[in-house]
Image (cartoon, rainbow, N blue to C red; front, top):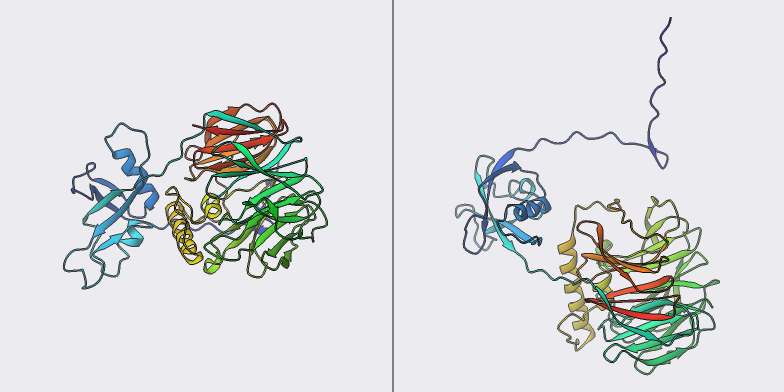
Length: 457
């Protein structure tokens, strides 16, 4: 009986493109490393042998495991190696900072002062850690809206809160007294999104009427007429970051009509429209990085894609297609720094737009340098499971260590992004939770039960 040859294995393709051949891993030498404290040069642990291509993040994890302290807190470290005197040049750095790996930074240094046979003494400097305490209780419940609350946003200083509702009104709340300060009337339909100018000079709102309106939060009055252009309701708003444009930031609005429009807020005119999506654009975010540090626009749509755009002319840069259903929300780990601009925990106000731009840029670059990961742009990281209904909104904590989510299951949940597990469950709403926002150690949520809840530690 003749044997049957099995059919050839089907080649895997990615969006119609064959899988590229896998490159064999490059061999890396093993080296002996001694970790010492930067301040007194005392050994943190006995010398260890490890591959030279271990990434800086892995070195940090290893040092935390080697520490003899009993605490479970992860301490961030910086690592450097001191150059020998014979290799140091006048008016040049006397240390080699390890930012990628030992192989790339130390053995690849132009001085060639170290070899694989040396016992490498790496000095470790612990960094101060800014941490946000997770909210655990509802500190107050604010009522006033006569219809479900659809959006909420803290001001950059955290002193004010703006909420939008199905009653067509935007309400401003003074969080020091937890009382309403102004009621803004102008929309003819539900108010679906509110967003503060990072300098806290203006408030933008978008509604079911397809209009985008600007407000003066101090006077509680509109700034000019509504900006019209969308043929369907406005789903999201995003201001241009302060470190990119401190004096006249532009405003981006997304809509059910499948477009994103970028407005010049001084002239109140449309600069350009983005039309690449084939369904409703649910979220727009204005990031601070991009090519040449000019910023970048992120959009998420019901066409199951996330698209990245150049805000200077509206050119599409990247399309992310791995979602299996609508992309209803989107959050950036730089959200807090971008929306608060120059305002930090010191409560100091900048004296000029130039000073505000410098402060905002310093805060943004500090966060980006701390959170720079493996560089896997657009790669999937983890799925957070726990809600039993659709997730309507996400918000990052100020330290980028937690994410808070609002869901149809009437709960607010806080997620730990170190373990990718549920950290705190905040039940309290009696119906669907449509919106959530995070500032410092406070969380605000609102939903179908027509109440605003403030959560604290």
